[in-house]
Picture 1 (tube, rainbow over the protein chains, first blue to last red):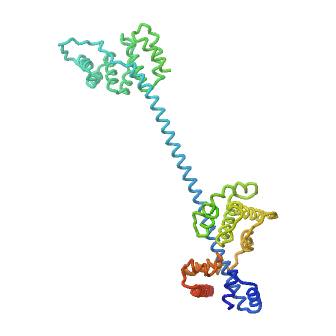
Picture 2 (picture 1 turned 90 degrees about the horizontal axis):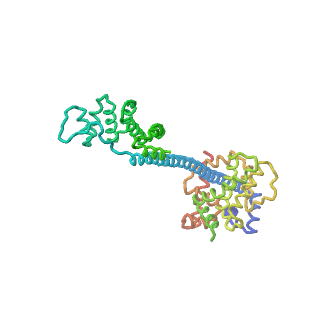
Picture 3 (picture 1 turned 135 degrees about the vertical axis):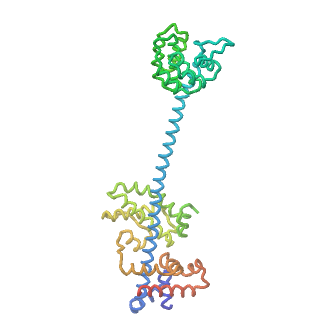
Length: 234
Length: 177
């Protein structure tokens, strides 16, 4: 077998016994042959190192990918958790508001004009009468505007009621807070509507305080509603 | 054909997805196993990766075509060997089937970087794709010339032999330069 084929055969591992002996003989006697074998063996080692380095590099990239996936997943989980929390809080908050809304709707009734009842056909031109006419007619915007200029407790009470009708509960709150109820026959009604307004604004504690005060007035014709609402707020 | 044999075939075909599957399938178990030894996580992963590299090499050399154990067992055996070696403990009762002496050196880190080999690596990198493929298939994967002729689509064995000779010559020239 020629030298090249012997060398190839050696690396392929297909030499038979005779060929192997020939190979070994040449290796020990022929310097050039021996050198060529050594050279090809170093080629083999170099390629092995290259391939191993490539494979290892690939495995290291798998490791990095895994780390990145883990980090990404953690981020995703915390974002999802945040959304979940926000969702839960929103539902809870909505329920809070919603249940007080229900209470408000159940107990609120438009308070009738008990101050300046108007006789049909009469048209009093002063602002006071105009305001009450607007209130009676359901024009709460006009009523609120006209009632806002009065210093009279009753007028301001109806101003607050008008704001409540308009859904402007914060404005109504401001008016209620400035009202001195000590000297009016409408005291209990004012307190009742003040409490109802607070319920709508979900300020349960403050509403409870007023209602417990009100509950002492057993002659109040809405006393039953007062105690019922008190119970429901608990 | 069972799942493991298919994986080995895929790895021989340089299917990186298969390699990743093997890597990820055995990683945690190996890390858990290594916890009993005084090794850093980085060291453990390094050892594990070397074990998978050795597994991969033997697969590509066709030495695992008739693997009797599972891939996991095989990789674990290599990893264990390397751990004991690194900790300078006696490697008892760990048999490494079909690992060449050279691979054992690799695992035991007796594979010292040789300046000559490094020069050879650099020269090898400058060869064209065809040359690198022929030489890798022959010298690394240990494929026979007939097989290589088929894989690379050469008309005849002689044409392939000439190509291989030219590549080796180029390599020699590259080393001189």
